[in-house]
Structure formats: C-alpha cells, structure tokens
Length: 345
Image (cartoon, rainbow, N blue to C red; front, side, top):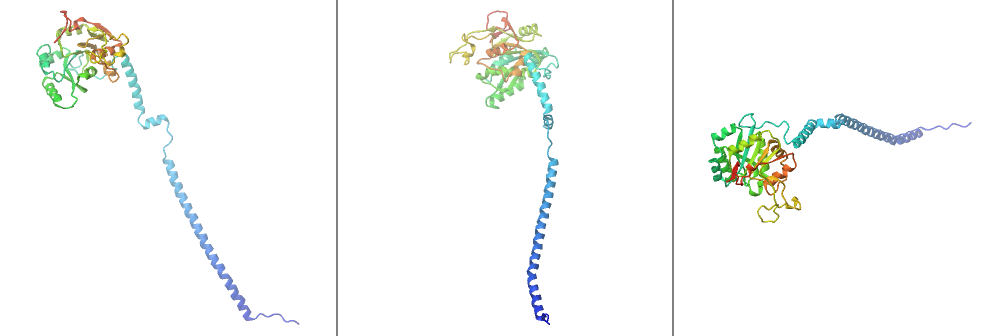
C-alpha cells in the first residue's frame, strides 16, 4: 500500500513566505492606484466647482447686460427725443421766417420807450479817427444828452455804429469805450473788425444788432459824411409807417468797374453779366429798410454774400426777397434839389 505524501513543516514555511513576497507589490500598486484615483477625483471636483462659479458669473452678467433698445428708446436714453422735436419746430419756424422776413414769436427786445414800438433806429457809421466829426454831428443835427433821450421817447433812436479794433482791447477800443460811457450814443459791434476792407460786412452786423436790440418800424443806415434834416427824415418815415418789405433810398444803377486799381473796382465783376452793369440799388449814403427786411438780414447773416461795396451788397440781398423798391429823391444826398432830407457834409 502506497503511502500519501506528507508535506513537511519546512515546505509549508517556504510556500507561506513565497505568498507573502508576491502580495507586497500588489498592495503597493493598489495603494498608489487609490492615490491616483483620489487625485483625479479631486481635480474633477475642483474643475466642477470652477465651472459652477464661472456659470454663476456669466449668469449674473447676462442678467445685467442691456436689453435690446428700439430707436425711440435710444433717443429717450440719450435725451434726444425732446431735442429732435425742438429742432423740427425750429426748422419750421426758420423756414417761415425766411419766407416772410421775420422771426416767429421773437423775444421782446429792449427799448427806451418800454413796450411801445419805435419808429426808427438810425445808425450813423463812424470810425476810430472820426472823433471830431462825431462832435460836429452832436453839435448840429444829432441831439445829445437829455435831448437824445427825449427823441427816443418820440420813437427815434440814433447811435454811432462802430466795430472793434483788430487788436482787441488796445487804445483805440479803450477810447471808444470811454467816449461811449460819457455820451451813451454808440452801438458797438463786438463781432465786427473796424477796417475799410470790412465795410461791406459791417452792414450785416449793424442791421442784426439793431434788430436784436430795438423793435422798430424802420432801420436806417447813414454814412458819416452825411448831414441829416432829422425832422424831415422823421416825417418821411412816418408817412411810410406800417409798410412791410420797404427798401427805401435814392435808387441807382451803373457800370461795374473791372479795372483793378481804379476807384470803385469790383473784384467779382464777372458775376454781373456780359453787360457789366449793376442791378438797381439804393445809394449807400442813406439806406432805409423796414423791420422784416432787417430781420431777414439778421436771420441769414451767416449765409449772405458781400461784395466790394455795402450799397451793392444790400441791393444783392434785396433781389432775392419780396422787397418793395421805393425810389425817393429826397434821399439823394448829393443832389442839388431843395426838398431833401440829407446832404453831403
């Protein structure tokens, strides 16, 4: 009978030690696998938290973003809707003013006679070197002091008209300011440079300033070499009171001087046609415009073209409006007739 193999005690110890030796690496690998799993899980959890935070921020930004606006909403937000309405209204009023020659709902202007409408504002051109001539006028036909105030109570304002020096604030300006403060009979055109070559532009500034400062039936421009029969002029204006569109003066026309260097040379002579003849216009010594024509100049002063001389300049403006030309030979200051309201000084 065969005997069964019997393992010895030493054999069992060898197999046990061999099993223990093979399990240690497995445990180590399992340990590191757990660590790797924990690391990856931690990173995934961290990334998910970041995604949640980012999503929260994006959601808040989305809720705070401006909503889509219509054009009307944008105009309201920018505060432009009311401005747009006022612009449209102003354009309509300006169009009406241009067609009729006056400003709609024009604000009240200052007047020495309160709310009473004046008969006329008379502007006498003057310059920096004309002090003696001004004193001569004040001593003859032009009232001064209390007499000037009483004339204004009758509805007639008279002012010497002058611009500013090319060197603002110099001795020329200071002397005029001092004289004006003493006599109270100046209309100083702050935006006009007083110079011979700027005379055609001066008429725009005069009529604009006169309309803005006084409400009158007529606005009269007078050169500083003219003596006036003041009462005669007042009578002439009284007879024309209420006449809109009146362009009054000693009307004339004549040849355009094309020769450079000659007296009365017109640099833009080619604009006056092949015949080189001026259109009908009032001589520059004395020009009378009714209120609506003076307002037309005030409204459009920035667009109105000027020529070499102020009389032809005014005449060019009158061509384009509904002006009534009134040729009154009493306003021909250089004529020899007896019945006239002005004469050359």
